[in-house]
Image (cartoon, rainbow, N blue to C red; front, top):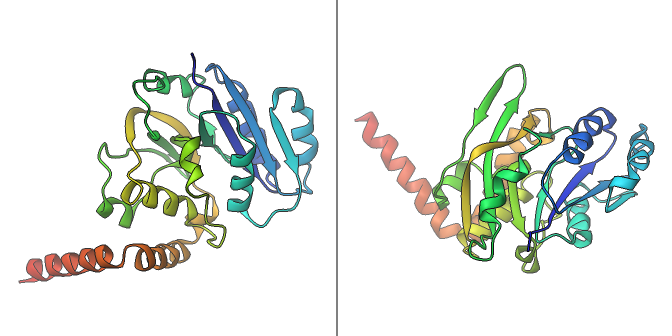
Length: 241
């Protein structure tokens, strides 16, 4: 039996980005696939554009929400696929076969919680951001997994959803807790999955990203985080000698 995927797009007043993202999802050759769009009550023409694609959507809604993570949780609760991927407005899949690269791992014998690949990052120039095959606490202190290139098993959300109290770092928190506390199983796919446009809120607010991450680390991983910081301090001190 083929594994069904759910692709979820979050949008708010980003018609230009939505016009990039939706055709990219609908062009995917992978089957079976369902597509959900969660709009936050846009007033820029996004709603009319989504409605024009209604026949191709499993679900869509346009209504005020409490922020991006509230919208993502709404999408999770409506999704029917075994795995979910968030491709938010503005981002696109790297090719029409992007999701098909996951196929060898979408079998009963390879029931990973997370499957993730690489990103093509786009700003003034383009570069490929690759991700490690092994994920450890020290990695998540500095980085995260790419939600536009990560399939998440829907059952992972039974334990916890995205933290709606955070403005930017909730997806990072989900991956960090999932890997380091819940021991999610995972598999790295050595291929480019998505185009990520470096114009989102997290890209523009590095100070807030660091603040929220440090708060989570102190609350959830105080001992490990303090040991990590001490270790980094000692390494720097040794180099200065």
